[in-house]
Structures are given as C-alpha cells and as structure tokens.
Image 1 (cartoon, helix red, strand yellow):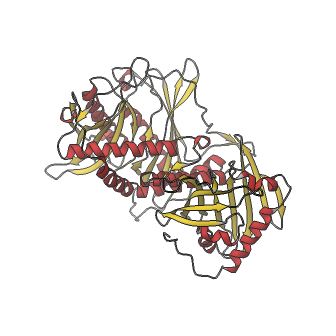
Image 2 (spheres, helix red, strand yellow):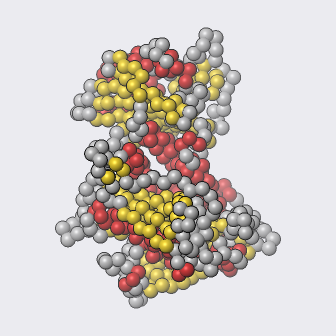
Image 3 (cartoon, helix red, strand yellow):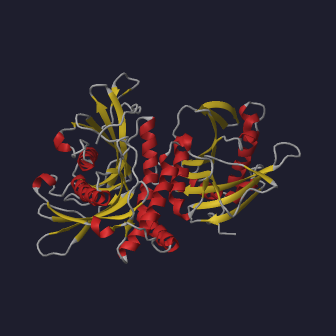
Length: 576
C-alpha cells in the first residue's frame, strides 16, 4: 500500500505521567512495529491488506491473552475502514489494548499508524475493534477479570464498549431484517449494456492449514483466514476491472466456527455489485477434513475501489448478476451500501460534525441509537466541568468546548435507581415536573429501547412562538454494576411530522440522564444538555447566574420521584 502525502493525524501517546511521577502504561497494551518489505507487498509496491490483517490479529490476540492469562480466539471484527495505504519501506505501528472484559469475551481496540522514517511523519491507517473469546480451561468456563480504567480515554472506551457489544449482538438479526425489507422495495435488477457477467469474477481457492498458520492451541489464526479471504476477494475484484483494486473497507463479521491444523479451507469470492466508484465482493470460507461435510467458518463483504494515477477513484464497469442467487446478492449489495452510508454518516464522523437532525428510518435505527447513547456517554466521561452554581445540593455545571456550550445538573434522590430510570424513561411524565414540557406525545415506538416523541415547549418571550422538538429517546439498562442507567435524547426528522406554522422547530444534538446507584436507596441523577440555539434561551439566565430555575425544575423532579417511588414500574409506552 503507498502512503498518501497528507499531514499526519495526531496520535495518542500510550505513555502517561501519573501524579506520582511514574510512567503509566496500560497493562494489556501490546505494540508491534513492522517495516514493510517487498515480500509483504503486491506488484504495485503496496502492503497487502491481508498481511496487515494478520499483524493486527496477532497483536490484538496477544493483548487479549495478556489480560485473560490463557489462550484466546478471534470471535468477531467490527467494520474496518482503511484511510490510507502503506508503501514498501514504511513502518507499520500497531497498538492493541483491551477496552473492556465481559464474562468470557473482551473487546480489544486496535490502532494502526504508518511511519515514514525519513520525514518522521506518522498518520493513521485504521482503527478497529475485535472481540476475542477466552478458551475454556480444564476447570470449565473462564471468568475474566475486570478491566480497570485509569485515564479518561480508557474510561471512555470502557463505557462505549458496552454499547458496541450491544450492537454486535443484534447486528446479524437487524441486518437480516433490513435486507429483507429493503430488497422487496428495490425491484428488478436493471440490465446494462456491456455489463460484465458476474460469473467471470467468481474465484475459488483452497488452502491447507499448516502449523505456521495456527496458534499454540492448533487453531488457525483468525488473521490468517482473513488474509486468505482478502486474497480471493482481490482476485475477484481485479477480474471485473482488469486493474489492481484497493480494499477500502470490510463489514463487521463473526467467526462461526473454529479451524484447525490439517483443515482444507475452501475460499470462494464473487463481485456482488458494482457501483460508480466502488464494488462489493462477497467472500466465504469453509473448512473440511477427509470426507466430512464443509463447515462454514466465515463470510465477509469487502468494498474495493480502483484508483488512477492521482489516487482518485475510477469509474467501474457494471455487473450482470447471475439468475436467482446472483440477483439476490445484487439487490442485497444495494441495501448494504445504504447501510454502510448510514453507518458512516451517523457513526464515523466526529461528534462536532454530526448534523443536528438525522432522518429517521428503520434501516438506520441501530446506528442512530448507538450514536445517541455514545454521545451521552462521551459527555458523561468529560472531566473538565466547571461548577457554576449550587443550591440545596442541586449543582449546575458548565463546559465550553469547540465553541459549544454544554451544561449538566446533578442531584441525589432517595429513590432506587431502577425506579428512577422507569419514571424518567417515559417523557410523557416529564410534564408532571418540568414546566418546559407543555405537550409530549409518542409518535413512533420503534422497540422497547427506542421511542420517538414530539415535545412542545412554551415561548420564552411574550407573544412569541413556542418550540417543538422531534426527539429520539434511547434507553439503556446497565450492562453490569459498573454502568449507569441511561436515557439519551437527540433530534431526528420524520416526513410525517414536518415543521408547522404554530411552532418553531427546535433541535437537540445531545441530552439525557445518567442514573447511578449510590446505594440500595440513594441514586445520583445527572442531566446533560449540549446547548444548541434552540435550547439555549431556556437556560441562559441560569448559566449567567441571573436565576435558579434549574433548581426549581430539579426540586420538582425530586418531589415527583419521591411521590412515585413505590408505584409499579412503568411499562414501555405504547404507540398512541
């Protein structure tokens, strides 16, 4: 892979100076540095992505085993987007560390950078998350020890790991639902003149798993399987364009079963669809020994581009799918492309670049919900809040960052955390204590965790228009005792509820509650809001110290919770 002449990204220093003066280093962190030699590169002088995947998997596996104290296997890898390519002579630096451990699996974060030894520049290549499972011991199932977060960055990754895990667990089910609903609306495949027959791009190859391909437990390295899959996928892509393609991204995938020394791995790839500047290649790996039936090991979808001499994407030939299964794959590739764009639009951009309102659609629910909860967790993990005022143990904090004003209100109540969560989860009950909630109705009940409300608020000026908001409320119960209950809020747009003449449409980028169990009877509630222009007029006098309406509102909230602390747990709101 050849490096592009771009300024280096700012990379986090893995070593931090503690207050004691000692250098802190995450105990699970593993670093690997490799100089790219011609044997690692293709005929274009670019590092093979397959080789990079092997290095990434090895580094991440060593990190997982350092934490687990036993052998580990690759269970899944999240989406990987390769931002740059790497040329011969450059140095690849890989840092892997365990972000969070669950019962017998753990998330490992992997950061890949490229270094030019002659100019002393470094730039980011990709950032990935892999899940590793600890192997069972003779005594039975492994119970992993907890990860202790020491820095703000580690705390942030620890917190977000729970949300990423949730998305992995429901990913396959949601993708299946989205594809079945999307393909039904895509219609027949369009016939293009001079289209390349998909059959021409079909590739099948077999590999014998030998000891160098396996770990010390004789299981095939996940990175080695990924490398073989990347190889056949690259051949399939090359057959479409008669040129050398560049792998840009790999969709999230799971290893469905193990492979061992002596296995024959059958690898199959075909171009599912070609768009203007990219193509999707589907590839699967199956294993067998002797006369036994094939075992499905893995399937993946890889997106390729072809770059010209200026490193710009070329226009690709169209594909003519095979009958039946080929047409299904063709249509599903269109649906997956939409999902990828939604994912990139909502999740991949920096928090400061996220648009205020994102159109709501069943196909992007998972990513919108993830972004909604993650944004609240990121705000919760910031440690540079400034106490603006306090009255009767209700505290108002502010934070100015990136020309954005955020505030939080914090208090303790003598109500259980679970009951507090249930009472605050239904925004319709907020009218009972928050004078800013004039109207509130459910307009879309997506599922038990995601609900869309329309909220109307009164005007802050005499004779002015009130505001209304279309809010996605995403609720999360704790993953374990180290997590809070969460109620995250953000604006979305719905074609069924456009702005009206009676109200000015307001927008919320990030708001919500974190609810921590201090004891069985005491709960700490923190309300956050990233003050957008639509919200700022309601709280500006509090932040300026000219009033204490925040105290009145949260005193009313406290009284509301106490009055209802023994009521039956609130049920998820139903569609009105």
